[in-house]
Structure formats: structure tokens, C-alpha cells
Image (cartoon, rainbow, N blue to C red; front, side, top):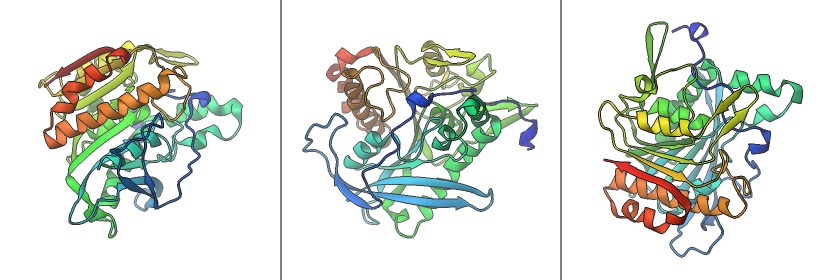
Length: 342
């Protein structure tokens, strides 16, 4: 396929403005062992040790770097392989972002591989501020959207074939997750299909068993989400907030757009899906930033999101229904809407 002939695939100007970009500083060095706490800093006796490992992979076939960070439970080994979450960041992010999720999952026995998508990563914030809008626009075009999906495939290949870590991952229990632009990437690798010039584009990775979508934007230029998402058959968790609004020059996306994605997902086949809408918040409340969406609310939503995602992962990978059934009761004060279909 000649990608130059493909029209815009994904939402232009998706996700985070500079003030919404993640805190990319990390206090952890590669392979540092740590004991996790909850996102709001409470002592957590259930937390288990994990290690952090950074990779500088390069896809020689595409001449493209794919940096990644792995949060790996200390218990993981060839004799005890652990499930994996592959996480894709929003525009302007990096492998260091969404660390509260990686740390939490690893502390609960689930490895987490956080990708960095060169071309739509934190490098967008450097350079002439007068050309930032154009850099964001370019990052949301078809070529980068496709490259991100291919990054996902490549990184998973690299990790599973890694001589040191590959045998520690249970390749039969893998979940894809992402925020905003990363949620679009996640939808692509879990079965979303877009037609361009009479050709159906699919980047489905059969190794993925479920999707976690944080603040998923619509696909740009499409009038019917069901044509893109209706045939997705994998279980999906959709997380958003009543104030999950995208505002950028020339574009506005209401919080209702996240609900439309949920409604369309797997509609043709009655796929397993769950929706949670937090009260208040913001589009960037799910990043590592600590104040967006409200100084008091932010850590509470992060804590609830960690527990929710874990409950979903345990249900779809391990068949454990209990945590997801109890979650709405535990976090009722934060939630505007909870719905599950399965």
C-alpha cells in the first residue's frame, strides 16, 4: 500500500497541549528494583517488588527507533511467566509517562511495557513554539498513525524474543492499553478497521486478548464509528470523565465522543465491554500530571483507575469476576456512570 495516497486516518491535533504533557523525569534507573505504593502514596502491604528496564530497540526494516520501558514483577521467570500490558502514550508523551500504571500493574504481578513512538513523542515540545501547531498536525497524520501500530507489533516481537526477558512473559495473556492517541493505536492493534481508497486497513495483532482505552478520541473524518469498530470482538475497558474534553485551535471534541467510541465498539457481535465515566476530571487527568482535573480529585481518580484496570485484566485473563463486581461500590463517590456488557 502506498501510504502517501491514504487520507488522514486519525484525529488531527489529538490529545495533550504542552500544558498537558507528561512529567518525563524519572527517579528510577534501568533495572532498579522498587516496592510500589498506590498512586496517591499510601503504604500498600499488597505491593510486590518489581524492576524497571529500558530498551533502545531499532526496527532496521523501517529505520525507526522504538524505545521502551518494562516494569517487570520480581517474581517473573521462565518457571513463572507473567501476563503483560503493552501501553501506548498520547501525543507528546514517552515511555517514561503513565508510570503510576506501570508501577501498579507490576506490583500486582503483571508486567507492563511502555512504548515510545518517535514522531509523536515528547520531542514535539522542542523547537520553535510558532511551529508547534504544525508539528502536532504532522504527528497525527496517517503515516505516524500506521507507524505507531507497527511500533506496537515490533516491540512485542522484540520483548518476546529477548533472551533475558522473553521467557518471563506469558505470551498467551497480553493486553493492549493506551491513552488518547495511544487509545487509537490500541484500537488499531485490537481490530479497528478503516477503509481508504477502497482498501480495508487492518493492524490486528492476534496476540492481544483485550483492550484498555483511556480517553479514546474518534477517528478523524469518519461519520460512522460502527464501520470502524463494530466488528471488534475483543473485550474492552473504556475509561473517561465527564470533563474529558479536547480543546485545540480549530478543533473541539466533547466528552460524549468517548461514549460514542464505547457504544460502537463490538456492536456487530455483542463484544464484551465495560464503561466507566468519572465525575469531573479532564482529558489529561490520566497522565502522570498531579493537578489536572483537580488537585484533590486527580490522585483519587488515578487510584480508582489502577484498581479498575486491574479488576478488568483479572477478569479477562484469569476469569476472576469478583474485583470488577465490587469496584463500583468501592468508588461510587467518584463515578458518574458504570456499565458493563458481557
